[in-house]
Amino acid sequence: MTADDFIQADPAQAKLGQLLFYDPILSGNKNIACSTCHHPDLGTADGLSLGIGEGGVGLGPKRTAGTGEDRIRKRIPRNAPALWNLGAKDLTVMFHDGRLSVADTYENGFNSPAEEWLPEGLANLLAAQAIFPLVAQFEMAGNPKENEVAGAVHKRIDYAWPILTDRVRHIPAYAEGFAGAFPHITKATDITIADIANALSAFMIFEWTSFDSPFDAYLAGDTDALSRREKQGMSVFYGSGGCATCHAGPLMSDQGFHAIGLPPFGPGRTRRFDPMVRDVGHMGESDDLADAYAFRTPMLRNVELTAPYGHNGAYPTLAGIVKHHLNPQGKLDAWTPDMAALPEVPWLEQIDFMVWQDPRELARQRAAISIKPRAMSSGNQEAVVAFLKALTGTASVDGRLGIPAAVPSGLPVDVSQEKID
Image 1 (cartoon, helix red, strand yellow):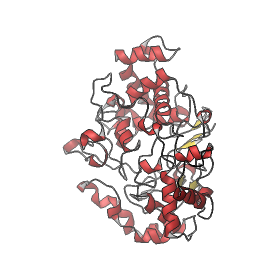
Image 2: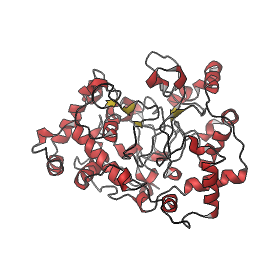
Image 3: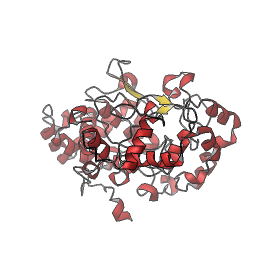
Image 4: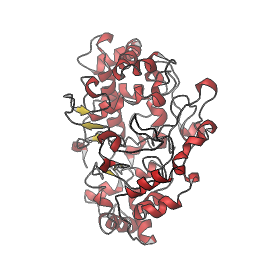
């Protein structure tokens, strides 16, 4: 991959997006930012299997579920995805279940949960993605009756975005920043949610585009960039291991959906009319039974930094997720709840592993597994893990703008993990 494979980000817009990304002003209760669940010290994720969103306290594995009336009401149903290389021009689908994609389904360029109510003016797929966590109840919006954003969402999704936009407009530093970064904005009232989303997109592209790993150097002609063990792993990955069947192309993802039988837990995510605690994956978007329990193939650059692994963070290590791919049924049967990184939430304990009490649902998930068992020696498994670690960037993983010391709203910024430790 080269810079030409990515959307070019305007530096002024990226700087503005940096401030917005770390600013809790975009959450319903002004207590959580994009960075809370996508922090650079945690591989642009949160280090948890299932995140703790609105109502939680702290950062990363040390984040707690809150107390009293402010405590969380539900775990985030899926693992927080990393943000690396989301500005790739060839990227066409986002979210674990693919509920956002480039399409003309609603004559606005995207197939999304907002359907025909998606705002106009979104510059790219990543900008479209950026506005959905803001209006998700358990992620950033909050619960009904807590704030005006949450109340608006429950009327219609697009009613909430103008409220958040108005907050930003009334902060002089943001009004000035938007006027300087976007030619079509001359006054605060010109700012729209699409402009906010485009700034967030510019920042994420500018900050977390990564194609400077040893593997990329090898592809560019430096045959010494990979060690002997890493080259062995690369050979297995693209050969007998069959990994590249799905992790294909420059993005190392076919952008398709596959059911690999990851151990289920948590509240699940399914269609509104489905009363069961389960996660049906892409079927929730497509309504096609063939897509049951299938999830998007993740891209792999910097995968070493993004543990735990899987759409629900079922495996804490790269070795664990590799072994699962080789024997999905066996590893599903052998999996134990202590492998999940789930901060203690006593009032949700009965829900966390409720799906395991439903043998018919587990049978359906096992029957849907679409990958076949594959033999691989322990040595080759270790070599594949070494190769996956060779996908970690060098200078790019440090970020370009970093964490701001303060944000224009004056609200607290998520501190560095080093300061927490």
